[in-house]
Image (cartoon, rainbow, N blue to C red; front, side):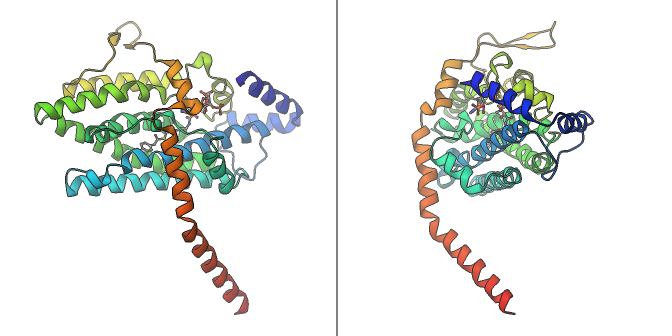
Length: 327
Ligand code: FAQ
């Protein structure tokens, strides 16, 4: 499937005007931003639409695992913080849908692709949140992995995506800290609370490593996306950085990363770590994640139940434009 997609990209590239393509590539190489009205190769447009819309869907579906705990947060303070965080994720989804729309695909089309199961979203959101410690683990690890991936995207070659990332990263860094702070509180609490924190780390560690995507050698999009500076670092480079930063954070909490192969390698100046279960990753990508069906159903239900809000907003906008015309 990936080979077909790659050869399609090459075929489309071969049909592009070589002068325009060369001028485009020179701009990218000079680190200029490409803007919506600029000429761009169709394959660049397609890759960006795919990546940005998947990213938007991830933010929106990503509200569900944490939203599940808003009503059960252990204090008013925790509830207010979680509520604000989940609302931030909605905002990220909206910036990203807007950025993707500038490439010529409507939001309606993107949302239909999500609801029909055609569009992907991050594998991480197909795992259940079983205890309050999972909310700490999500902020610490999932937002931590998201920032690691998104900081370089502030320099991605497409202007609207890069600008959206600047604001998103500021908010994600607060999210990461609030998650780590929950873990600190639990690890300094009772023995049961510490056990819950360790259990959450055990369940979220490997899925967090999967967020960076397949190994570079098996990633069909990385080479071209690096050439076009859509991606600024590869999946494996970012995964390595995440492991190196997160392991000492686990040590500071007194928790054990569930990977017996994890150890410092002085020669490479980074940690060695065990093999991710890529079979599980591909199964989750195919829609077979533990709560995948529940997630899509929740999105579809929200869309259907929100129809009256969209209808009312459209009627209001129409009334105003009629009044403006009449004035
Ligand atoms: N899950 O060739 P590559 C967040 C797909 S935001 C599902 O390596 P690429 C905030 C990939 O799309 C989290 N699918 O692809 C938050 C491709 O599909 P194709 C989301 C995955 O694009 C926190 C195929 O596999 N962040 O968490 C995954 O060059 C807490 C081959 O892969 C972004 O989306 C995956 N994990 O690199 C919200 C960041 N990995 O070609 C709420 C932007 C790969 O069949 C609570 N995206 N695939 O359509 C990216 O940086 C890239 O798209 C990668 C994948 C790195 C995800």
